[in-house]
Length: 269
Image (cartoon, rainbow, N blue to C red):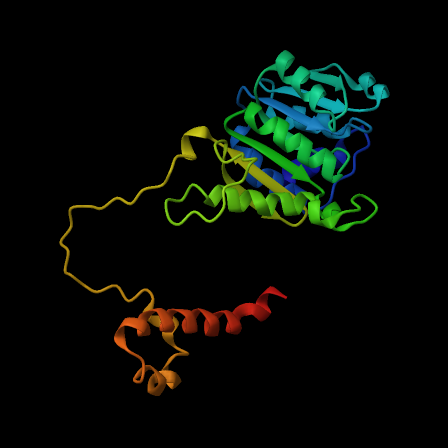
């Protein structure tokens, strides 16, 4: 199917630029929306080529809206494509946009690619995407390019990493940190590709997780889920024999965590 999308790109009469790997990702993420009554928004119009491609790809029932900062892009309006002129870095623009157009199903951000552009678009758009909708941010490799972003600490990719932590906060185990700003009541899944991040939205799937059991026979088998992690403790057995039982459990846990961390920390360099 990605060949069909690639063909639409290559035969379009309007000039467009895309990275080659993107077509497979598009089809992975967008194919289920084809032929459906959806609202698709693309940020970044340039020469208008990709909007015509999306018009054909999604079919006649889709509403296709393009957003760009340059007023000259208004010339590409028509034939089933709407054009909105505005600044994706401006939160007020987004408030006015969603007030006029309502909730949407897909937003593809191929706009300015800066931290401010991508993060502002994410935080203003997520709550305005319908359940089972998608926010796809392109060219996220700019998080590593100083020309686009002077402060790597506050890059879009680091924002996404923080959002992964936030997504996992809903899991009902020990809660280490609660973020002041959270999107975890909208986002249930995040996918990372080379230079693309995809947020999947569904408010019904962000509920707190819970353990369920079936009615099968419980054979009373002991769970050894932590035993394997004691592989590096064996040579310390002579020391353990000298420690009182009360202190031993806590000491073994600390030692095990230290040894295991020391074994894997190089994989984080």
